[in-house]
Amino acid sequence: MSEPIAGADLWRPVMEAAGWRCWCTGQCGTPHSKDDGRCPRTHDGYTNPRGGWVRLIAAPADPTTTPLAAAQLGSADLRAWCPACHTAATRAARKTRAYGLRQGDGLFDL
Image (cartoon, rainbow, N blue to C red; front, side, top):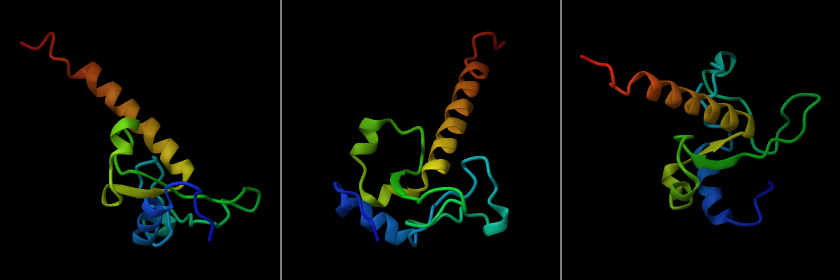
C-alpha cells in the first residue's frame, strides 16, 4: 500500500482504525445508502472505472477545524477521508455554520 512521504507514523494508525476505508457516513451530503451508510472508497482503490486512484487522508472528524488546530491533533482525533467526501463535508459544514450565524445572532430577539 502507498503511504504519505511525511507523517506516515500518524497517518497509518488512522487508516488501520478505519479499515483502510473512508470514514464518511453522510457528512458529505451523500447518504451512502448502497454501502451500509458508509463511503465505499478504500485506500489505493479506484474511484470509478474512469477515475483515478483513491488516496485517503487523515483529517479531523469535524471538517471546520482550523488548520492550526488540526496540526495539533493526535491519531485518536483524526478520521480517514477520501478527498471527495472531505471536500464536500467541509463545504456543507461551512455552509451550515454560516447559515447558523446569520440566523442565530439574536440582534432582533425580543
